[in-house]
Length: 75
Image 1: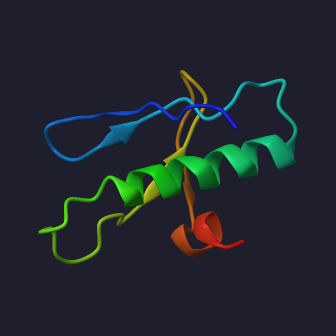
Image 2: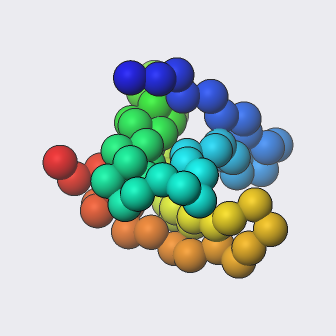
Image 3: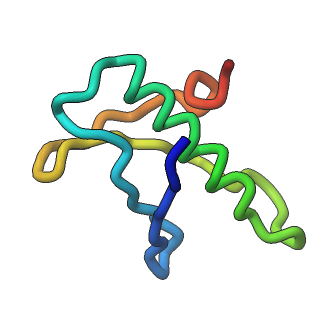
């Protein structure tokens, strides 16, 4: 496994690279799941409510596509 690095904006938006155009579907799915797990593990213990409310995936300059959170966390 690799290392998951991400940054969060002031408003709670989190950005991370999860793949490249050359990645196949399996590689992207694995990376997205690892990223979602890392974000969930980073949730402060005192934080209440849903920590992830929406996931969008996009290319560097492309429009975002919403991803179902349950699908992104299912194994």
